[in-house]
Image (cartoon, rainbow, N blue to C red):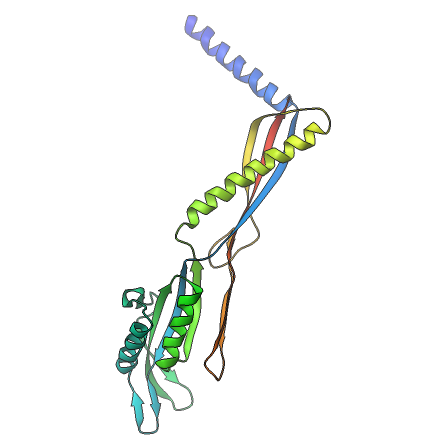
Length: 226
């Protein structure tokens, strides 16, 4: 009998609490925050392709050796260079001559615009024509994502506070917190986007443009009105 009474009491208490929660006055707001971060991990794709001009032929192995030498001259450690996951070595068909040629895909990891510039100088000296920015990120990106989410939630509370103060009311406890999906996307994933580009000129100078990574989040929050 005592056990039955306790169960009934618990169910009634939960029902009363739920009703109070639903009928309690609340305010719902959205807070947004963003942060720009200078990338410290920049990945450059490099394509080495077997060259054949008349009787002159340059194998991939010869190009690799030259590339390694030029990177060393630019003080770029070779352990930052690795074969691409997509393709290590493959044969492609040259349409004009109907000839099979070998090519290799590499990725070079650098940490600054200055190092990108030195890498491109090495590519020029090694006569490498195909290179491009693959990806940009930051070694502490997850920490920045958490920081921006917290800032967005605080922005939501601040908004609720000044809106309620305008009608002589106060913000209470948070009743609900929801992370809003963001429409800004890139190869780096939702809520994080960046842009990078460079181009070669006939004088082998490079116009390098690397914008900061932008981390942006919106948080929807429901607060009690006191």
